[in-house]
Length: 336
Image (cartoon, rainbow, N blue to C red; front, side, top):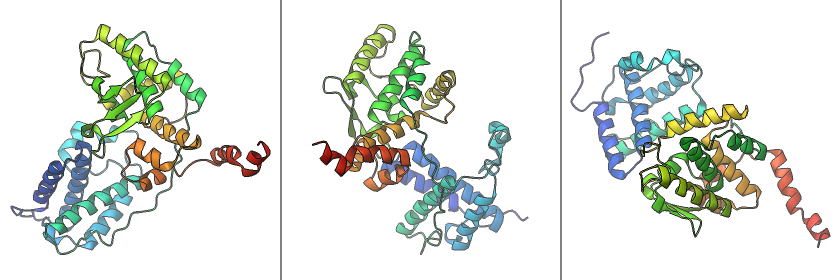
């Protein structure tokens, strides 16, 4: 195959421009990484398959073919830079070459749509080649339920005589009590927490939507946090972070997730639960206790109530039956 001559302003040049725009707009690093990874994979595909590297040459056929290709290829079998294969060794992964999930494909589609809409607004193209591309229908997987006994077993499996496990013990309970995201929880400072009013102000800098919000916690959690702060101050020289490592540095999400898997294994819980599952179960319990979807949306920091509704459509028949029994008109009238 003849080598493709690159223009000074090829597709990847505009990808760089777009990422810079996202940075100026204040999007999170995680979001920008997702955009860039999706765009570089697409760029490699159209260059290899169609010898195209100019933004204006990309048509609907190329984007629809890319989605079809992504559905058919296996996970981690296609990378934007072949040099990374020897470093990351994707073939060693347990899920290597398995079917790419519908949610992952929809994420690629969404990222490409955002990019081409940006290019359209900038008048770099006359129409978006993503107009004809629709998201694929994905089967909803019900979120794993964390029962009271599951949660007690998980907490009991943690050795609170060790600093890092005691810290994680408090974090797990705080997420379950407030519905915060794990990343938000780990980034909190002591000043963000008002123990007397049982409230936490999550600064815009650490939220997914870049909007500050308040969450609230219980009397039980208030006592737990007071004891934690007294303990932390005795052993760690860090007056800023709420949950530092034993070296006084930031606790990374990946490190906490690894610890969580250890506690889950110790507890004997066979369900596929994760730190994010604590947030999901907070939301479910909030709704099952009579909380309204609008308030829940605010607490969770969702961009709209629609996002919240879509996320928690999977209340089980058992959940609905239990909730109904509490609100049955005839039962309530009989008991008055």
